[in-house]
Amino acid sequence: MDLQKHAQPQDTAPDTAPRVSDLRASDADRDRVADILREALAEGRLTAEEHAERVEGVLHTKTVGELDAFIRDLPAAHQQATAPAYAPVPPRPAPGTIPDEADASVVAVFSSAMRRGRWRAGRRLHAYAVFGSVEIDLSEAIFEYQQVVIKAVSVFGDVQIRVPENVTLRGTGGGVLGNFEVDTLDSVESDAPVVYVDGWAVLGNVEARPRRGKRVADILERVHERVQERVQEKLDKKLRKHLDR
Image: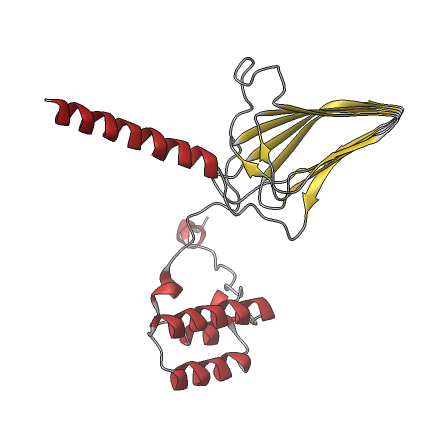
């Protein structure tokens, strides 16, 4: 037996996998680089002539490596995104955290009722539709609390719930010969409101979904205001004590 022959390592197959830089660039890759160049122009890192020249080159590139050459000297090209694609959803409120009593109720019995426009959403809302229709539109509401629970019950009726597109939406419920449908939504903002829809549809309909084009511009505005007011009150008390001495 030729031990030396068997001890020799076997030839490995050549690595034919293409490098990332050799891959063909997509339109999305070109758009990403163009965005970086546009930001560099706005920050003053590139002159208008340099920006125009590089954008022209980006439009005619064929590979990813060629694209990287246009932004290699820009800081944004070396920054890695550390933020998650969506913010973790806060734990569901523990029993007793949110009072069982509703801050507001919308009831429709053989009629219609709605709550929409610029209004303040509390911690808990109740919606009841019995042979009627209820609409709760939070797309322009002011969220005083981050977590909002909506109890929706429909009996031979219809409950429609609309929320801004940049909140988190969750639902727990079901239907008895009816429809209970909540479009799950995850916000990318860590302090975005979380709306929980709980309920049942008995020979009726309950739906909750985002209203596209509507976003919360003042997330937790009232909470921040209350914190500032409390801080100001403490400062005023300390100032009064100091003056009374």
